[in-house]
Amino acid sequence: MKKVFLSLATIAFVAAGSLTVTSCGSDDSSPVIPTPPGPGNDDNTPIDDTTPGELGENQIRIDGEVYEAQGGYFTVFGNTTTGEILGTYTWPAAELGLEEDLLVSEWSSAQVVTNGGTQYLLVTMFDVPYVVSNTLPTVAPNVISYQQRLYEQAGTTWQVMYESDNIEEFASFDTFVLGQFGQTQEGEPAHEVANYDFETAFGFVGVSAAAQFNGTNSLLYVEAVSAGKGTKAERFDRVINSFDMNRVK
Image (cartoon, one colour):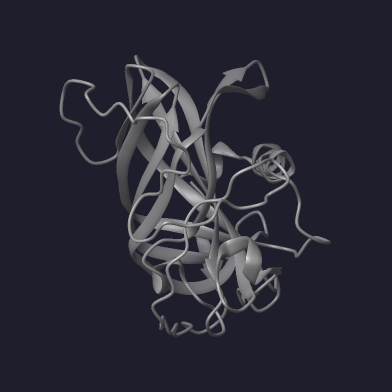
């Protein structure tokens, strides 16, 4: 596992405001009009929540199979020298059903999950309303969620096994506590994440796959800001192309 060499003082973060925004739809990143509060349902397709059996924390059921999270990490666009999290994209107000345009920071979560002794990768994409400098995902009741994908390893590459449909797209953070910023042993800029706790609810093959993930001593990797906002596919590709099992804690 990588460890952060602490080179800067602990950064204090302020989370304020009560914005409520929910899911995004098509692959060009145009969102669905939100229906707050709580998980969205952006069409009239009934959500089948009758799958038997209770799930515990760090478990998710997709297409009848239960996958258990073993750990993960997060990424965000920002200043790779100072670690500052940046607002990198402005959603037009009309696309989110809001009165004003919304500046956001672009995030991802990568969780390694296992089923039957085999490792898979669960990736969640989301935007966080940028209220003040270094805004964290706990700032809003829900973040702006895009999609969730489950990947399986094929040789040296990761292939999409399942991707969520649009019957439900929801993510919400109860806890996200940062420690200090520094560089990993491999020279990558990252914040320590003392602990995190978040819920997701995405639809897979017509069934709602609600889950809760939590962990401690993880990392938030700060990536250089890219030009413009990419499509869903481009954002997922960026995560997969940079994925490193040594990042997982």
